[in-house]
Amino acid sequence: MEIRHIRYFLAVAEERNFTKAAERLHMAQPPLSRQIQQLEELLETQLIERESRPLELTEAGQFFYEHAVRLLAQAGELVSMTKRLGKIEEKFSLGFVGSTLFGLLPEVIRRFKAANPGLEVSLHEMTTMEQIQALKDGLIDVGIGRIRREDPKVKRTVLRNEELVVALPMGHKLAHSDSKIKLVDLLQDIVVVFPKTPRPSFADQVLDAFNDRGLKIFRLQEARDLQVALLLVAAGVGVSIVPKSVTGMKRADIVYKTLDEVDLYSPVIMSTRIYDQSETIKSFMNVVYSLYRAEGIPYIKPENDE
Image 1 (cartoon, rainbow, N blue to C red):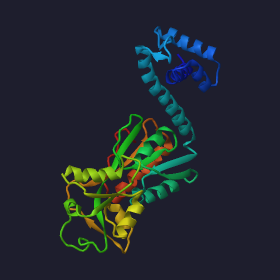
Image 2: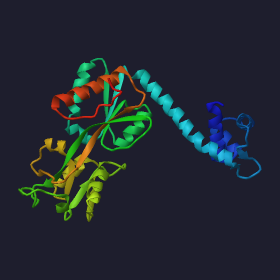
Image 3: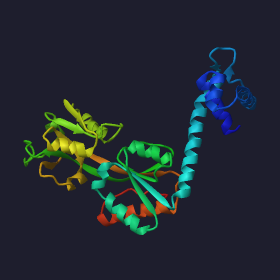
Image 4: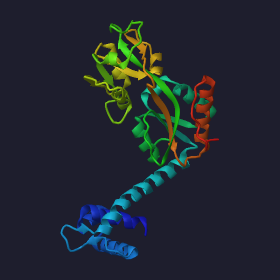
């Protein structure tokens, strides 16, 4: 059985018509019919009920279809990742969520570029979910995100658990309070979360923090990204929960306050392709680990990393 057999079968199964499937594949109908017949002979079972109109799949055909969709997708990912691995010694692409730029990421990038002067480095702001797909599509080589999402083709390393703080407008009643602030104290405010799409995202981590404590947000405002969320806070629209590293971006109209909550943090997660063992990837990881050691920040180093 060859990949072309799978492509042909999927076209027929989805169009439910040999003529339409042949048009979709830009081929004549008789050769397509012969290919499907050959596939059935190889599998020693009937896949399509040819007497029905539109065509129907047999039970075996439906089973084969469901697995063939995944197999063809995996084949496409394999091609993309292999092409990317062949070019990684010349070009390196990093995907990141915007909030990580306020932490150690800029210094990581500077050190990595200094250690690899002949390497073309490109940066792409994207959500964690977009990073995972971009890794599998061969569009980026490393992703720095915050959402825990498992994928068998992606290796994920939690670099740190970053404390969360609350951003308040300067005139807020809690902005200059000496008492410790808890999430329950923010329920009278509009809570600004980000990003608005796609989900799940950091916004869901914040919402989960309230839900886990049995708290219901009565007024919620979704912002496109971190920058818009902070502008809304500065304008007095509401308050926002943000990673502590964001406090490095000083604004006269925003006050950042520590939250008195246990286990309230957001992870910083590095993602790479599971089989990617290139020297460039190893160099990037070494820069990350050495900087975290220098800053005295605990991190989890995978056992199979050298």
